[in-house]
Image 1 (cartoon, rainbow, N blue to C red):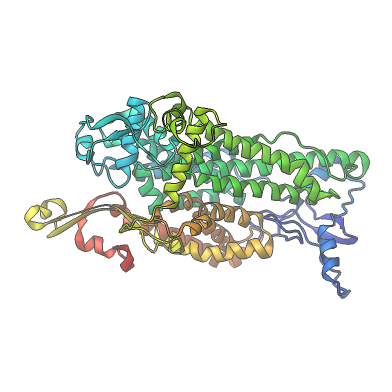
Image 2: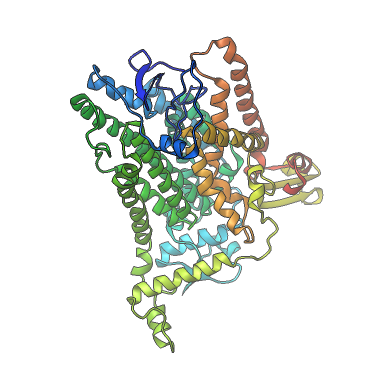
Length: 604
């Protein structure tokens, strides 16, 4: 366990028992401290004196002890020493290493990710899978200002540069428009006459996501190396690569959720630093916290940023709403835990009311307002689908729906009801539909494109074999996904047993982007939805890498086996990624070579 900032363990008085605590380094501490308080964070726990047997206590006594704030004594210390001690209790540590490497490392990993996402981006030179909806809708937004309807089977004409199939009649679409406007930005930049224009936005946000995850992982693990390791896993994962090379909505959902998660972590750190500073000032002047709720900390600007990001995520797909709910609960839980750590006597009420209510107002209404504002183009264009429903349909009905609403709001609300009905009743069979229970092991991946060519059609010229295959299979890197499935067990254990806030942060992603899908298991859903989960999957695997590497203060001979094991995992993931790259990027390969990649019978 690492030493505190003063160079020696902190001596504190907690619940009447004298003990020594140390400011642990979240990136290297092999056994993070735990506390008796519930919530997705951990603090120091009072241990009984080794020479005295702990008396038996009832459950009511245990509850009272758990709810009692620690009594911290800092007599004789300066304000700076008190602040450093509180930061240690709050598990806020500085990140070692150079500032240059902190930015250069993520940039290099992102550059590598760019190669994997931009190379052969124009293959195939046709619309694949749900590109038939979203690319054409994006083009329609540029031309008409709303999603227009298309004639039957226009994909071949569209790919050939013939856009005459677009009609002025508004199309009924079931997802908000943020992701489609992002696709439209790429089309505006590079043109609609090339697949590069269709897909460049997806590729760019995929690349930026890798960079963001490197910075997020650095902050989460207090290590630039571990942050870059997590980003490398994301860069070489098949789900993320394929979804960054195909222009459908889920990569944009993933991007905004990850950005919101990064803002949430920044809020946690900045809030705790401000709380520690304010508490240190008060303790240094008066010897203790005079206000039983603890000091005020002001506006939490990073929660506002998180609200904007998550509102945009919800404007891509409604599943972003789950991230608003889960991340909001975590923000409040971390706040309550922080109040206890600094010794606020009424820490539950302080965290829930003094900080929890403002946190809710900073995050949830901001996300809701951002989502509503994403519909401005729909409101401003009178030809948008269902825009005139209130005046043309509802006003003529025998019993009008919600006549108390303004027409513009009533039409918008009715549209949302139709979208809700569609999403909850989508049960049509599909070859590649899958169930959430199999997503973590990639039980049934999604085939986005498939073509085979035999000898009589020129296979030898394409791939040098009697039969060639050209495929895009959205399957995750088996080393990453199968390793992360095992790692998740450790993450859950660390969250529950150690009260490790890093493990809880990772689980927040699973709770927001994975667990809710079990409520829709009867719907037509697909494994590629896990692109929004991939960042948290690779963070779970990186958590195990951190455990394998061990604490820096351990002898190298003790850490060496874990370091070698971690290195083998990374190298294997790179090798497997190189092996799967051709079927992630639609390269022509011999059919027998493609067949070697089908590790499970459900992959075909």
